[in-house]
Image (tube, rainbow, N blue to C red):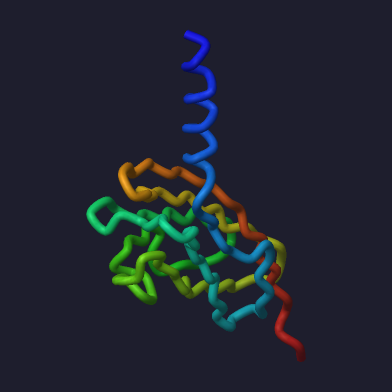
Length: 132
């Protein structure tokens, strides 16, 4: 049974290694003007995101408008890329500090095995009043 523990530790490290979710910590914009929330998934060499499994990005907003609250690979700027990226249009009608919560799900594949990835991030949205 002692050999089982190192195997589980290595498996856990593999599930968390090999990819990165790239989103800004803060997006600044003005009332009434649109902005863009960039979302990119980067993978290490030898890794890929399954094209057979879905890539799902759920967006929960507070005070900021988005056209679609659920994005898939088809909504990506580059849907056929090994690591898709998104440019989400956002809009705010009032000044203030708001948040967008991301929930991302996809399958990360190595040479032999694919593992499910489930990640959550929060992005601060700062909306300034329109200058007079």
